[in-house]
Image 1 (cartoon, rainbow, N blue to C red):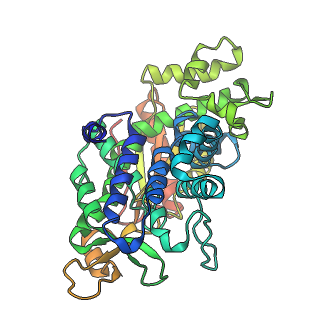
Image 2: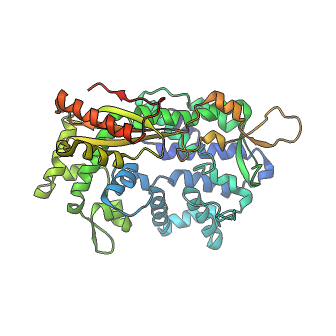
Image 3: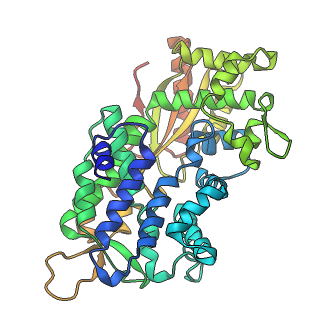
Length: 440
């Protein structure tokens, strides 16, 4: 284990799940310092296993979040998440008799084993309470609700999965962010479990002295989305990839274990078919000799040649206004016959801090006074402190206008003016969020 820890501390790429496992293991180990929590060895193992396996579904399918997000929407595929597929893959792995026998040495047999496996699956993805506040999971009682928040925290989004990818992507992309490896150590050391003051169930809370570090988690996420995940060039390329995959969808097929051939947008209906899809789908499209692939191949060729649309305008707006489809439709009406769908693209960027884009994570975080002499209680973050520390908005929402790189200056000016007219009439532009002209 010491060797594993040393290797993971070097933060090499391609070890995402192992790192998340290790962070979860160390986090629960730290919580176990409080004997009143009654964290058992099986509890510890199950949380660690959930961290290791939480992204099995993300490792398959083309481009993970792009596949279960933009491509699913563009192709009309049914809703799903790669977390739900992670659970299906985990069940498939555990169905192997040798693997199950090995796990039963630690997770018990019969109903005990089934309960522990249910716990692992519920950590990866599940609703915790119904609309009446009734505890739903069957893997562990509500007294151990805090264990569900180590890997995927639905209460305030502060969890080891986020810790891992923030530090990993900052390191690999060379983009400095406030949150770092030492931040993880500080949060792990200063986490403890206390009752939620409003709902009563036990939650992970943090010492007031590390409040700034907790705040930096959401700020760092938003920063990476702005500078990396949703960089203007990344957004353009992703849109091109989605279009190429959508055009190729009906001409790609993957055989399921039921003998049925599934199109790319249908592979989530059959796990065997889904497991055959990877990022290599672009290579399959590029190397295809089918004439139906020609349009998709043109798009992939344009990406390779860096013939990528350029952003010429961006308007920041509120969440209720960030409707790229509406703006695109109105822009088409504004330009009339001059609108060229092949040369104009409207995209939305949503850069939030980890929750739903409308709520700031810090409004949900619970802190405790690490200097309190008497009974330690959890409290929400002081509103005045939060107002001074961070912008009121939980997210940055914007609408972006892209045009073909080959479009001349006169045409760009005309399209840009039409875009200005549309966003102004639609009430998208606020006094604080003026249009930002981008270098073409």
